[in-house]
Length: 108
Ligand SMILES: [Zn+2]
Image (tube, rainbow, N blue to C red; front, top):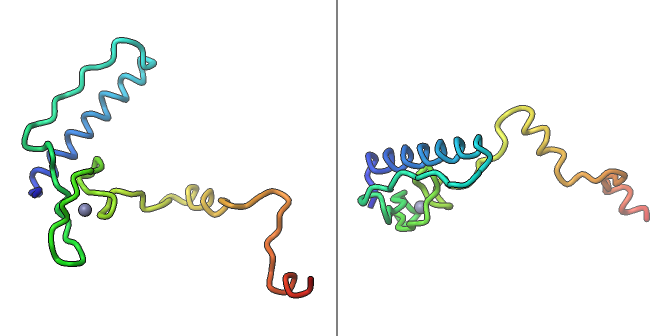
């Protein structure tokens, strides 16, 4: 089971990990690889702990950097910026193809 303090430290750990990777990226990912900070023992096998629909705590231990599993906040919530939303709106659009309206479908 995870406490708020553990989740906070878990997030901080992965933020620091990302910093190390970013710094390595600045070096061009060249050899030798960086030495990553060791994960504290009590944060290993940390459980999600979110409240499930059944009312029990979630017991999944495959967590994202935010300390939650894929069902409880681990996945992307979608585009938030204006540019991102505009980009997403174009997904699935193919050049030269036009949307079929019900009128064109029925007339064929
Ligand atoms: Zn969960």
